[in-house]
Length: 173
Figure 1 (cartoon, rainbow, N blue to C red):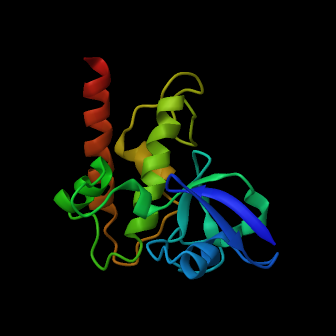
Figure 2: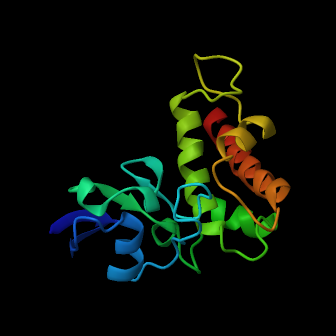
């Protein structure tokens, strides 16, 4: 079957079987290997990508289910000479060790900050109305679906908090 998507701003047509996951199509058909296969059960978050503005586990969804969708992978968030704010913050805050989970962490954090800006509450949000404050507790709760086997969690939260604070300061101006 043919599935057409916009991936990292580029329209792509992929010919694949009906049981091919989005993750496998990204890695094997398109060569976008930044998205990692960790557990292949949706439990680790290494395969997190942004689909139509929402973070998803690419290992749990079939490619053919997303005809016409927009997908952003780690490759679409920045480049070595032009890093996204979160990529730069992960570097400055040592938010990674082995780096295997880092693409999923950054994709998840990118969409998570958008969720906060849209006013979507989490389990630990103080209120169901308005924007949640990007506290360490709020960030940790919202990122709980992304595991890091190297235990870089404090630095990951620091990196995300740094970007969230910069966004708040920018919005206040």
